[in-house]
Length: 318
Image 1 (cartoon, rainbow, N blue to C red):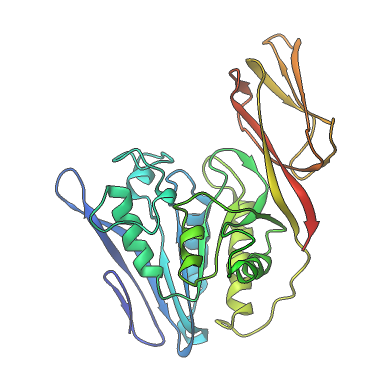
Image 2: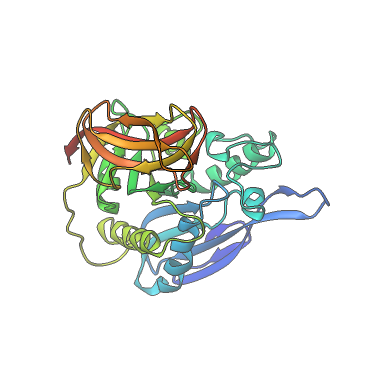
């Protein structure tokens, strides 16, 4: 029997339910939506979650399209899914958990007696704790961003190679291989021996269908490669960045980009200009290093020092 919260599935069955993570301000129980798929044959366990950042919805779009396509009769092993991790942030379309003003994906492995975010992290981490693989689905918040997969354990970690293989199999085409901040699930789970990746499925307000479909394909790649489903996946070379440079605006105004996402840039190339409301150029920002234009803000208006864009650096093919 596979159990996650109130969802229970015998071999060859699927079920949905709720995972309790506490109570809301009116005393009602807060339960995260969960699904379990118990394959007809023995195999590995895959844990998937989405929306740990409350305004990152593309991962939820992946799950909405993925789960109806999963037939337990065809699957070997178990798939456990938490559809919406940051319940409170999702309800108000905010990145952080508004109950404790915390970025939930900085609280893993959590604390079952701690803050709201720590309790959610503890409950979902426990659900993932005996998995063989973890996919933590994200997107670039409301920025515009490449579809990429992040390996966050660090190059010296004993599971680095395993995490990198998982990222390559997921196949977004781009990999950011850089140690992440403390408290990320993709940092905490490898410490427990579980290869984990953080697919960043583009960036959008609302749902971006191209990124969602890329995520669905990525999950199926994992299911085939690791034996949950029959069949094989032919992996292709990925563009990997191990550095990440962020650029802010030297003045206030409107940004005008000189490059597009995915473009190669060289040191000294213009990334963007800042103009006044009537089109006069106030500032020009150039690349400090060669790399790939990776991420940019969605709206043009910026204040002095405000984030504008990022370049992935130290590029190779993996």
